[in-house]
Image 1: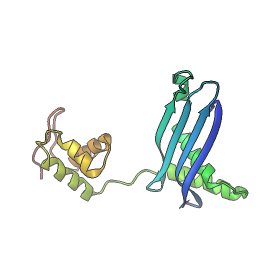
Image 2: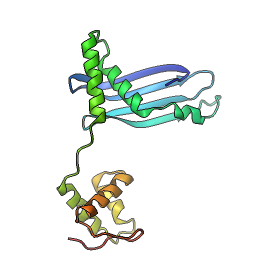
Image 3: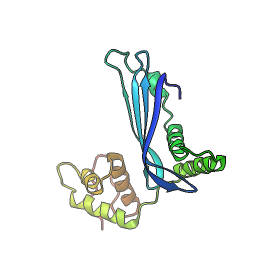
Image 4: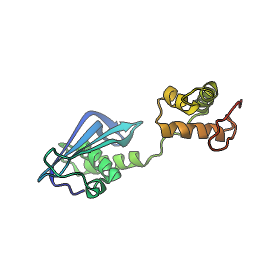
Length: 179
């Protein structure tokens, strides 16, 4: 990534990751020069998998506005790998350790998330049915109860349907009954 200005990586909470170590949480800041915007990117390990959780690009009060080119510079996957590898190798001079840490970060990043258990899908179906007539909708109840994002809640409802725990529905209509 090419960003005009100062770049700084910070992290906290070292944890083991495969054959290496890295930070549990990380931040990457870019301080733009010549009126270029500033940016902050936050990361964390979630279930042992390095993830980008936030990108914030902000124009300076007296600087130029944000351009598409500024946003296109963010290759989230590469940034995530680079930041966690960099933090896992701070102060390390042994090339084998550096390579092992980089490999561990790449492997952890490429792993699929765990599958959803039948018990979790049964809970989703139960909550969905319980809040079928709720004014906010049953998927909103699933979202709140599970601490999911809107997208994940909808996906869990669909997975419960595919598992036979909720009846099939037509778009725009709520599922009913189902045991």
